[in-house]
Length: 231
Image 1 (cartoon, helix red, strand yellow):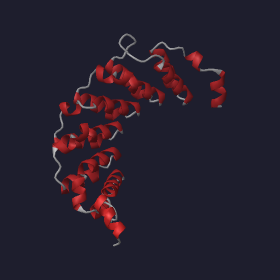
Image 2 (image 1 turned 90 degrees about the horizontal axis):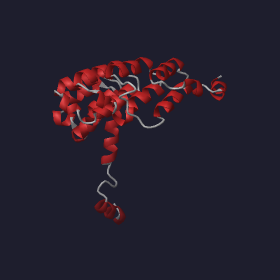
Image 3 (image 1 turned 135 degrees about the vertical axis):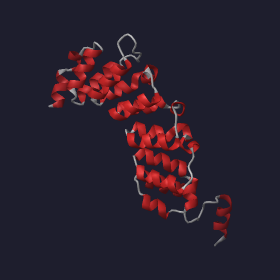
Image 4 (image 1 turned 30 degrees about the vertical axis):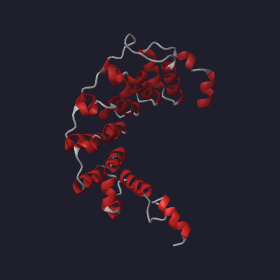
């Protein structure tokens, strides 16, 4: 090894090593999110141990239940690991609608309503916003979420749900939390923007329900320009 390499290794410990810490972390997380249990088995166990929390989160994010089960069967994970980074693992699987993963995570680690309190609004808004009805219903019922949770972030969940045209989920969300015109708190123009985006996406049935529910003028949104663009 020449003198330059020796100096670099002193100042940069990861320099010229077979695999840097960053590379190991990336490989572990990528394999976890893709459910590549076989690839994880080939990685040094010390590295798996080091990144087991992030691996668990990536498994939940990708809905990779079998890989998560392999992880907890071979490496000691505690409830603190499941709670890491504000219950990131639970938030990720709920946000992406992986109800089976969420149920397993809760049952295996014994997570409670108090555990879900951190960032539960974010989990709900993404879950509803992406139209994951069953998962949203389970999450709301199991952890006892209330109207204040539903209205977090200026009713972002409802607006995204309508924007994406998830009519059934939107109807349940509004009815379950009784989000009437009298109680809904929202930034100016957000309802109108959600309505316009819903129409632009071709979700007319959802748009008409939304406009009727919140007394919005849908006729102005259905301009000739919109009609010509959608043809």
